[in-house]
Image (cartoon, rainbow, N blue to C red):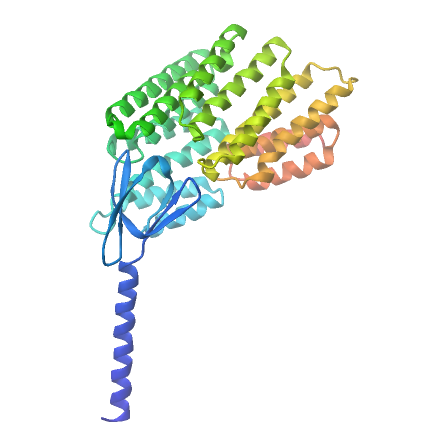
Length: 418
């Protein structure tokens, strides 16, 4: 055998081995499941999904199958995303929601069931709805929120027996609640409140039907409570003192029914805190007690073992915004010559600035982060600290440069200090 032929054989053998190795690696690339307690499960693939659990089969020689409760899952990283889907996820991490939406839409349109698993169209729809929700919340735009609500409804209708069914119904109710808040007139607000309540009732019904097995009691209780919290939350902003006390008591009851240490317990307690602040605003007293309760709850959530990092960020961000909002409201009733006013405004600014310092803005917290920075700048302006307010507004303008609404708000506030 000549050296030339030996070299040729060796080259072909190496190429064949590399091809086999590459094919083996592709065949054995796992789906990675991130759990809410911070741990991960890897080494296998999702082979079946339901509203209750997913089945996960290991890729080793034994191929053992385990069942993982949907309520314990924070995120699933599937091993085989289409290119457009991966690019869209990258755009989301940079806050480019409009272009991310476009790419999710392309991935959905190009979906080939012979090439990709069924998670692709389901997650495309889910992320399309999420990007619209974030845009609608950022811009306080009922029209965009309506588009998000429609997409969540479409997701629930097309995938009624998949793991995202209850989350889709719940988030549709969240969008409709926000549409009521941002409605242009009372008639539209009433209409959207009614729609939201109907959606939360549908969530309760779906949980009762799909999670009726006694083995799924924890999941059923969780979604039933979320439905009740969502329906009651709508009433807080329009309630008088008497009704606020009733709502506060109802949220206490809901919190006691919740699985201990789970996010749904803290959601109910957060609404209880919201009632405390609303009651303080209505009666002009009880501010310190409401703030103390809010800060105590923040500490509880931060230390919770069964709540994911993402859920903690959402809950704690909203609580700090509550503290900031009501401190600003409290300051309005205090004389400018009273030292207490400065103290309260400093508390407001501190509360608003905590979320941007503690958490990176993502699709769940972007609207709250934007509002925190903007409101923090407003508090600093009232304190006379225009230099830091200016820096914050420039940061906000750079971060949310794709939002025309925020550009206008920021420019208007900048004109008051420049």
